[in-house]
Length: 564
Image (cartoon, rainbow, N blue to C red; front, side, top):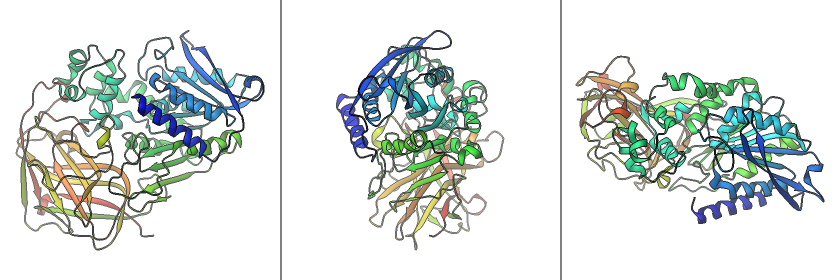
């Protein structure tokens, strides 16, 4: 992180503590550190911030908040957390994962977090100054909490877990397409040795399976596993750690505050995690979804946002004041920010809360328009997809490294490229709210055995400005609604499903859908060939056809919220 950015983050942390509504109860704090020994003898560097109330803070019992991190560059942020919490009567403990900072052992992402988390938890609850224990994490430090959540009953009272989901496959792939901007970028930034290679060049390197040794100067086994496992049925996801992590929510009995953002790249996985919490735990847990990205930045271009509530520290303090200090068992709470209406609601669809959907609206593709009924005669639109010149990601939900494009952003004019087909509706006659998972059903034809199709749903204001709402992708191989290999030249039905959203589109605006075959670097660029994408050494050009009308009625399906 750049020094100026880090200073801004620390300042924001300090401001959030000051505005949290939880006053300081201690005038000073004390910082200590130690090496905690794990079950295999490896010692992990652990830092403590104690409240200081005249003498050592260890002479009294306190509520303790733990986090486990792999990011040495964020130490200044943890210092700010420690000071803010210690002054409010908590002991804050942060520990570096093995192989990071001054912790012993070899750095292997994800591999050791469960046992190390359990060992650290067991150590802390035995300390004379630990009255009650909670866990706080964001992103990878959230994963290190989930890693032992099912083993925390009776030892951890509550967990505050932000912007991470336990279904790693959902964060890695969408119907056969790899999320470069998440896992390629993260793997480069967190490899065992520093990587100086160009990110976009790394994403486009062929064959991708060799990029680590060819450009990064080292073999990265975890990345190789990711890029060779494009199916949810792959061994990587169905055995070992990722299977265990996916199943942990169903076994967890600790109250969870799960915080997510509509444009956080982990959002889809976070929702799967909430769905899988067992019923009893869910009744004592909180779910909140805001209009922010992975870093709690509001990313709604062209929207007035007066009630963002995007400050994490007041939320964290509210949770731990209730669960650690007052020692209360929470009752379920679900809140979500409704984009476009600038309000918070307590009803979110897709099984997340009380269902308030009113069916759906179907709009059919017809030449360059969207209409409420399917065209009577079949029509087609064609384009050529050349992987050498992919469509750039402009706005999106599965972005992390490409910061300027995360979120809902102003879009180019309709049909702004020859390989982008736009379809626009008439002005809406009434205001409606999307609440759930939108999808696009396409009837497609290609001259290649496998290829990709993308869809982006947008709101077009009366002034003609378009802003993305949701987007997604599918390959012919994994997006087809019927099993079996695709035969070039035939018509196949492809389903492109988006992540859920709550988004109000006002009367007078229009709906626009863009169809193409690439969205880079949000997803890998398809080579237009069958087989494992990461082993392809060259690309083919694909000639694509979108069919509309009659039995090939391509359409967009929008889930609607009941009128209030």
